[in-house]
Length: 250
Image 1 (cartoon, rainbow, N blue to C red):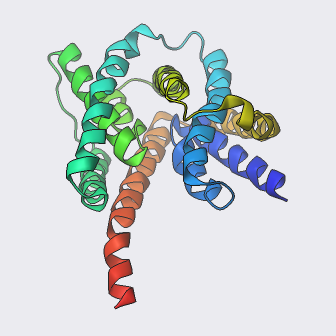
Image 2: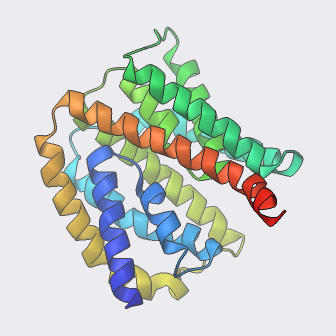
């Protein structure tokens, strides 16, 4: 039964990632917590998520390039360090609520077609990378800032999906490498579940790719902004949960 559950979760996560270009962790993390402990969930999502991203790399081979994401990926590293430090000096709940409010505000502005004219691309990409790394280390939602940047630049949906995939590949590999060196990632122990999840990931990718090819630019943008908004709601909700728990216990 657990195998079928993981299969279904991976299919859903791969479908969302393939259609909107991000959201694998957003879909998989809360559902996998029912059958895995939190530390295993993070590593499993990064590990299994590589399969879907490799399928997407193959599918988008001529639509993007790693060089365009290199600055953002490099800048995300200090963002990860800053986020880790922020969690030590501020409450986890307050950070998540602040980030959630920012994401909701950004999603609302994007729904109104608000955009920013960027004169210095390298500086803008560096800022996006730092913010993405910060969000990734505090909430696990590293995708929204990069998606907002690419949508602001009015890139077409194929380029957005291709470049986001390349960013996530770089991020996943660097995180897994660091986790392995620090002894928190044990690939052999997860290999069985990862292998069992491959059919689900392939099914989700296949179905998502079929839908993606039918999306026009306007609908793709709305779906992407919707996922950013959901990320914000989840972040605010998870930040409020400790306070609500205190109220309920009293």
